[in-house]
Structure formats: structure tokens, C-alpha cells
Image 1 (cartoon, rainbow, N blue to C red):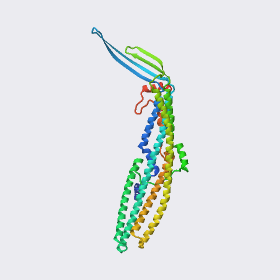
Image 2 (image 1 turned 180 degrees about the vertical axis):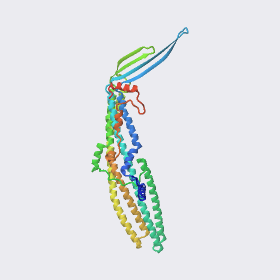
Image 3 (image 1 turned 60 degrees about the vertical axis):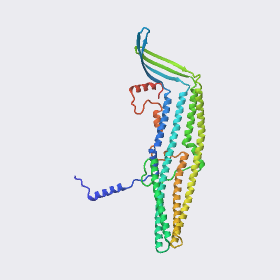
Image 4 (image 1 turned 90 degrees about the vertical axis):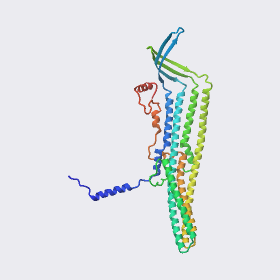
Length: 467
């Protein structure tokens, strides 16, 4: 059976469809798109994640203190002895040994340091959440500022068109003797000023685009879409402040700092307690003499020149300072929520007033323009009225933008401006993945191949309680 070749009409239809698809503009960015890209591309977030990993390693370092330390030691030496009669005696010595040191008891200071390190990790995780809030808020600000700049350009382009019409009307009336050349000059001057303002507004769009690229990680795609309905906020500022004290990441971070520093203070106290250690060694000398030794040593700090008490007092003071810091952080958060809420109320009030101002300015402009056609108003009256309308429109879109940002600013002040709370469709960073990998102090180092001896040593170490 022979296949029929597509006819010319069909091929033409396919070509037309492909051409249409290729010429379709890319989908414009939404606010969610900008936030997702900012979350994915933020170098600041990446930096904080690596710093959190470094904090995770503090747990591994503390855990390693619970395990024995095994060292391989080698020595070789040559000794020359000279006698008074000019003789010389030369001897050589050497040895190989394997030395194990293990702390059996230390007053609990190692476990206390492990607990402190774990609390510090939890504090750092909430610090990462706070960084996430800042990144998202900056992206929201950049998105809204770019939309505002573009909308102002639209308003100014419309204003240039209106003034151009007024200039033509003034020129027509001048030709019939209804106005003087001064009216025409006023309209020309106002048009030049409006064109200058339009050029400045377009330049502001370019600035806003670069700010968008800085915070989001790339230039915007298409004309930015209107932001979605803002998230729901608590019904009152008091409820918002109470919620912030419960959920804000800085509150949680400060609380974990208190616990961590308190445990460190207890560890400093444990440093002054007795400790017991095990030492064992096995070796061979150059003369093929084997030796094995094992012993237990005890250590009781009696006098350290005041160092250990000073370290303990220092740790206690740091723990007390962290408690005071929690109080200051709480006050700062309550104040931040109050200021953000006040900014939201001001922006909403400005929207109401600006809408009324636009309506009034529009009525005045329409009336002045009609009266000017009847000769009851001058060209300057119409141009002044149009400037008031432009100012009113600009004030309205600015107030609307301020109100949109204020909602997210309140959300950030409460501590809920996160990808999870906003419901963004993005794979979230899980800080527990790396922690679970390193918290038991594995021997593996990124880029290093485990050796057979290392694997055997791991098996031995597991017998000492490594899980």
C-alpha cells in the first residue's frame, strides 16, 4: 500500500500553524514565578545553607569526642657517642607503634557539648528561614516596583497624548484668533515637560528591571501580570503581634540559642570534674622487639591558674545575655509588626483618598476642556487641570502598589513570608538531609575515596558505640 504525500493545502496549514506558534509571546511572569526564581537562584540563600552545613559539622565534631583516637606512630634515630680517647660509637634505633586513647568518663561534658551543638543547629535553621523571608520580600518589592514603573509610563504616555491634543486645539484656535501665541507656547512648553517626564519614567523602568534581575536572578519575561489576591492577615494588629511571638523564626532561634549556651555553661562546669581515660599501644622496635601496653589514667583539675573558673563564668554570662537578647528580639518583632500594620492602614487610606481624587480631577478636567472650547477657560487652565489629573492617577497607582507590598511586609514581620506558607510550587531545601548524613561523624570527605583500611576501622569503631 502506497502512502499518499500531504497535499499542498495541508502543508500550508501546518506551516501557518508553526509560524503562529513561533510568534506567540512567552507567558508573562507572575508574582509566584518571581518568588520561585528568587528562591532557586538566591546566592544569599545558598550561602546561608552552606553556613548551616558548617554548623551541622559542629555536631559531628562533638560526637567524635565520644570515640577513641587511634594514631600510628613511627620513629627512627641515630646516635653517635664520642669517648675521651677518640673512639666513636654509633647506634640506630627505630620503632613502629599503634596508639589508642579513649576517654571513659569526663563528668558528662562531652554529652553536654553534643546537646549544645544540636541546639545551635536548630537555631541556625530558623536563621535560614529568616533569610528566606528577606529574599522573598526583596523579590516582591522588585516585582511591584517594576509593575509600578511600567504603569506610570502608561499614564505618562496617555498624558503626552492629551497634551498633544491640547496643543493642536490651541494652534487651531490661534489660527482663528481665539487665543494668542502665548497659549500655544504654554502648550508647547507643557508638552516638552511631559515628554521629558516620560523619558525619565522609561529610564526608571530600566532601573527597576535591573533591580528585578538582581533579586530574582534573571530579567522579567513579558509584561508582569497583576499580583494575586494578597494572603489573609490576622483581623487586628494585636492578634498579629501575638501570632508573631509564637511563629517568628527569630524568636525560635533566640530560644534555641538560650538552650545551647546554657548547655555550654554546664559543660564548662563539667570541665572541672575528674576524668578517666584509657591508653593502649602495641609496637615493634628495630630490633624486632614487640611491646604491648594498656593503662587507665585519671585526671583531677586542682589548680589551673583560674582559667577553668573564668571560662565557666564567661559561659554563664553568655547564657544570661542570650536570655536578655530574647527579650529584645521579642520587643523588636512586636514593634516591627506594629509599624508594618500601620503602613498597611496608611496605604489603604491613601487608596480611598486617591480614588476620590482621580474622580474629582477627571470631572474637573472634562469640565475645563468643554469650557475652553466655549472660550470660558484658557489653555493654561486646561493644562493645569490635566496635570492635576496626572498627579491623581500617579498617586492612586502608587498607593495601590504600597498597599500590595504592605500586606507582604506585615506577613514578613509576623514571620510567615515563606515558600511553604505562600504555597509556592517549588522544591524546598530540606536542612535535615545533610544533618542526618554527618551528625554521626562519618569519616567520608567529599571527593575522597574510602580505603579498605578505613572501612575496617569503621567496623572497629562501631564496637565503641558508633551508630
